[in-house]
Image 1 (cartoon, rainbow, N blue to C red):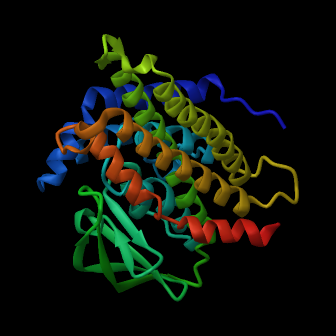
Image 2 (image 1 turned 30 degrees about the horizontal axis):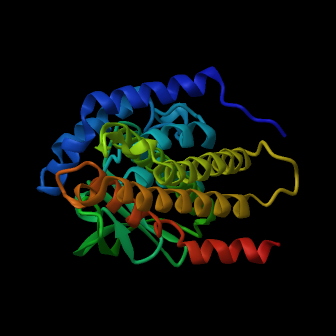
Length: 321
């Protein structure tokens, strides 16, 4: 089956990229680290105004009734700019979870308008200390939640906290589709992170000189960056194929959950390779908190295990063969 992004998808990617470029997400991420989430919240609202936050929400609830393909296109750009906040949880997981639980009304429309919200399918929820609303699924029951003690992660913009169930919203909730959407959205984020780190490393290699030549002219550096470029370009079709599967646009009998797992594994491997190679090219400056690469390095490390660890996803692939 042949699949190419349409002009609509290209326009969506360009719109999100232009918005986040103008917003200077790196400076807003540093404000988030310092405890001020307002600058990032403004970006969330701006994304909502373009329709990104409501991509998976029905038009009747203020969304755009789009699909997983549009979601991964937008999420790759969000990853490319390392936007902090409960992005996957608010834009990808909760809309699908609410649909499964038949939750309607303000809960959905608030998400479409840019509300910070997060959800835990296990006791620990990402970004819970900075969310306006938190939810938890426990024993197939969806509830609002109160937040326990927060814990830092390797990513200074990403904290986790234990959630305690409060008001019950729905029982007998199937979480598989919502978790798969979270896995797919995280894969797209990692793909964007990998591409951004490749760009940072390539630009640095062209500007940094040694022995009177740009270091990018040295064969060893070329090979490092070429390996990353190949990994990114090999992962992207898997992410798009998994999105097609989630949208039901694949042949009958396709194991969509396996494809989603493969997409996250490949995107995670590409992002991890990009982080290692970018750090090798930039050297000591890449370790510093002042350089934007540090934001990408730490976010990559945190997202590698978000919404499915590599070990769990590889086991799913193995069991499907």
